[in-house]
Image 1: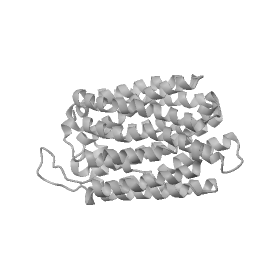
Image 2: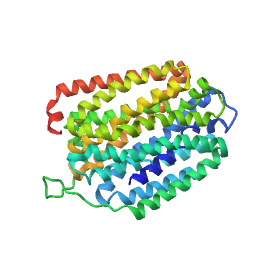
Image 3: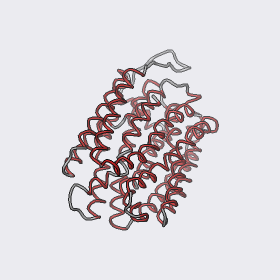
Length: 393
C-alpha cells in the first residue's frame, strides 16, 4: 500500500505546478481571470469528492476497501488521460468534477490500514504509511514541473495517466485485505448511518477533530492554485513550472522527514494536545509567507509548513481510530474525508478570491489567522471536555 500511495500521490501532484499555467494556454485571459478560474478548477474536484466520500466509506465497511481502491486508481487514470486532450476551460472544469468521484484513494487506504492496525501503534503505522504519499507528493510536483517544461502540458497529462493505471493493477494483485478484530471484543457489529452520526455528534472532541480536518485543508489548499503565479512574480517566468514544483515539493519533504516521528509522539503523549501544537506552529509559519521577496525564503517556509500541517494528518486519523469502533471506522473516516474535501473545495476558491481582490500576501495572512483561531478552539475543547482527551489515549 505504501507504493500504491506513492504512485497515486506523485501522479496527482505532478499537475499542481502547472495547472494554472495550463489554464492560461486555453485562451487569451487576464491574470485575474486565470487566478479566479484556477481556484474554481482546483475546487470543483472536491465537490463530487465531498458528496461521494461517505458513500464509498460505507460501501467499504460492507464489501471491503480493496475493490474500491482499484476503481479509484483506474478512474483517476481515465480522468487525467482525458485532461491531456481538452481545448477549453469548461472541458477541464467538467473533467476535474468527474475526477472527484475517485479522489479518495489515499484516505481510503488509510482507513484500510487503520482497521488492520492495533490501537496502541496506530499513530506510528499511519505516519509510516503517510510517508508513501508524502514521498510521492515530494517528487511529484518537481518531476511534473520538469516534464511540463520539457514536453508540454498535454503530453505530461497522458504520461501521468499511465502511472495511475499501473497503480490500479498494483492494488489489484499486490494487496491482501484482512479483518482485525478489536482487542477487547469478539463481536462483529454493523452500525446504521444514523448510529454512526449519533456516535460522532455525542463526542464533541471527535466532531471537532473532524471539523479540524476541513480547516486544515482550507489552509493547505488556499495557496495551491496561486502558488505557481506567486512563484512567477517573485522569481520570474523562466522555468516557472520547475520552480513552482520546487516550492510544492518543499512542504512534502518536511512532511516526509517528520510525519512518522510526530505519529510516534502522538502514540506516547496523546494525539489531541500534539495536534493543537501543530496548528499553532503552522499558523506562525504561514504568517511570514506573505512577505517573502525571494524563492529560497518561500521554500524554507513551505518546508516548515509541511512539517506542522503534515503532522496533523496521522494524529487526527489515529484519534479517530481510538474514538470509533472498528466496525464503523470506514464510514466515520468517510465523513472525515468528506469534510476534508469540503475544505479542499473552499480553500482554492477562497484563496483565489482573496488573491484577486487583495493580493497574494492577504492569502497567507488570512490562512495564518484561520489556523491560530482553530488552535484556540482546540484548547477550549480540551479544557471543556478533558474526559474525551484522556479516555482515548
